[in-house]
Length: 156
Image (tube, rainbow, N blue to C red; front, side, top):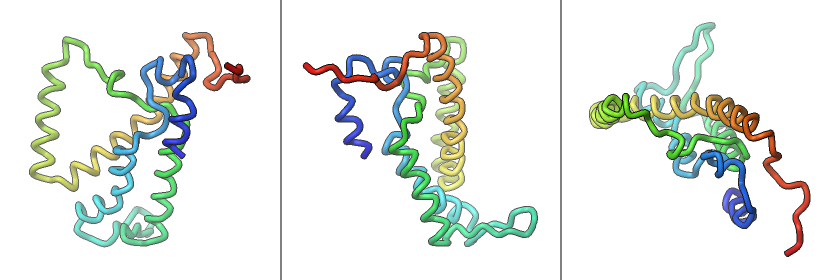
């Protein structure tokens, strides 16, 4: 569905998500990484599950739980949610050195604690989705709230 939607929208004169610097839905490589989050949690914790406050235990190897997680990620992949693009993530000149240092720390963390670092990256990306929604809503308000899908498709 993701590829079909992309191909159907390729000839639109202006795609609001793209023109504002956003992607439509979660990109496929990111979705693949998010799909592995239960595996990352299992390998990072070294246990089958994790006890939550209140006595509930989350089992990272439970097929039903993993299946529900995969369905949620599949819906994020084919959704029309605006997500941040690399072009939107341009740091200001004043903090570029700090961003390079943070990137180096992430690479070092991937080498020393790969599973825990991958969990952190997945959680950080999931936390960026509401930020992307808020940012896109602000951009739409600034642009006059043009609809994201044209109401009628003119014949060529």
